[in-house]
Image (cartoon, rainbow, N blue to C red; front, top):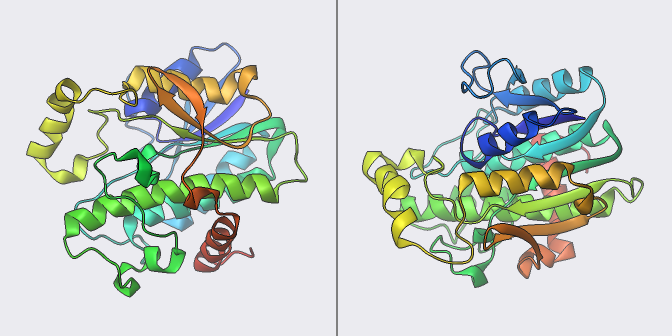
Length: 297
């Protein structure tokens, strides 16, 4: 089984990768900025290809290299960032939206035609996409691709950079889920494909907030795991194993546009937010994302 994965070098992704490479029939291909600087647990056990998700040209090149290696059985788009100050991608898009959504949208579209029969496409989303979850992260207001790519055009943009950054994160996770739902709809020609979104739950200490500075990172790693309790709180090993299971376990085969979320240490199927279930909004996000990056819808 050949699996292509982003976000495999830390947090839940590393836990998932370690689970996957322990399986005798899995060949894992991962995208990393520096293939020569892998975690010890992965060194010599995976095929590492250069990938910078902040640059769509790099995503295209990574897709070319991964496809050239042969048929792909599973694509896992797990990488993600959360920023505390405005930054731009190589193409000039807001960096969180570009990295978390546009890069994985492009990768999924490039790879979909090369997924083996009964293969799988999985994108990591988040419970923060749903205002009803009350996660403490500002909830998405919309999924307007142009406004998300160019926040200065958004009349609703938060004035505080930190708030805007956190909302950009939750909205990018909404976009991941909407992409999965629309991909499942558009690939009706491939009923054999399993197409899923995954919420790993709240996993303190994964490095997601690394741009927030030393103090916030220390609190995130050491204090939040102690003071926060709840059914959606998880750990990197638990969520990583769940992600690996979604990619390989026959019990999940055949799911189309489904949303799986960690609940009390295990993945359960859940209903996404109202906006994520808006078919017209999902189609608009797909079409507008294509226009932004120069693809036909």
